[in-house]
Image (cartoon, rainbow, N blue to C red; front, side, top):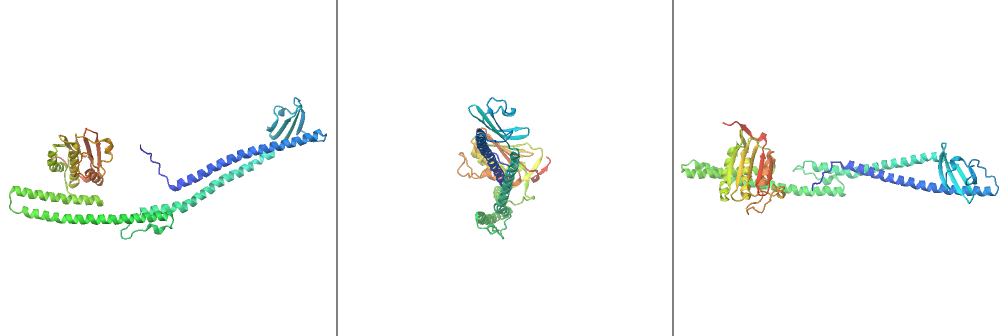
Length: 430
């Protein structure tokens, strides 16, 4: 199952959106609940107040006192038509009525045969509620501003140090002047993270220095005897000897030159040195013929047939040692895993080359890690370390070439190499 990658967004933006949105959301809920609660409490209080006022005025009326309140207090039989028309349809209880742009609070109480009605003009009171709404709105906006201020303080004291740490980590470390990240931060969580970076980088730096020295020492120790072998072969070839002896000397010389070139390949891959444009080049057909010749004994021992097909319309020269290494590893891999009585075919094309076989193939599940180092499958021999295809991929990446694999069980494997035009020369067929 593939996980969808989230869009890139800065931590500062995420914090601002999160803090402000959460504050406004919670403020909105609080204000909505406050409004609902205040409205309910207000209505209950007004109901009680109007009810008490109506009871008091009714008692005064029953005792024969002049209650006044003309057009504010009404009494009579329930079915009496003396009540104002706009009040006749309401039942007993408290009501808010908007009549002729005047907001009335109305309390109606029914007794066995009498109805009493008290009305009050609350227009001014209700209109003043706009100030309460404005105050609540101001509180709402203030909460958003305060939240923004809080998140900006958070960004200043937390996010900015993290960004500073990121910038320092991304800087190029100089071997002679190693940067100590922890010196730039206080002794808090971020400072401890910076110290952890320092510790890890120190260990990596020491390890890389050891690997670099090891590579240099190994290269020196290999080059010295190889140069002795080459110079000895050159001296021996100048002496009179039989053709068989001379062929053996030339074979030794060629093998030594091959090992010396491979050492340089491994150093270039390990150190990622710039590609030498003056590197030795040969026509692709010649390189393929040599790789097939060098693998012929291994193929015959496994009863495998090696076939070379040329589909090029032009002669193309490739960097010799890199191309030879790729072909050797692909052919050996096909011979190793193809099985007996299979065919391994090398096809040369204008845009590159491919190596395929009709052997057992590779399961789709295993294809995802086929280029990983130290990956060995059940049909591999004991001397196979699982580094061949990893080396091929690293060479392709180094040369900016593209390698693809297509395979299925019992239908063989197909490795396709697409080369970069900047690294080979093209010459017309003679």
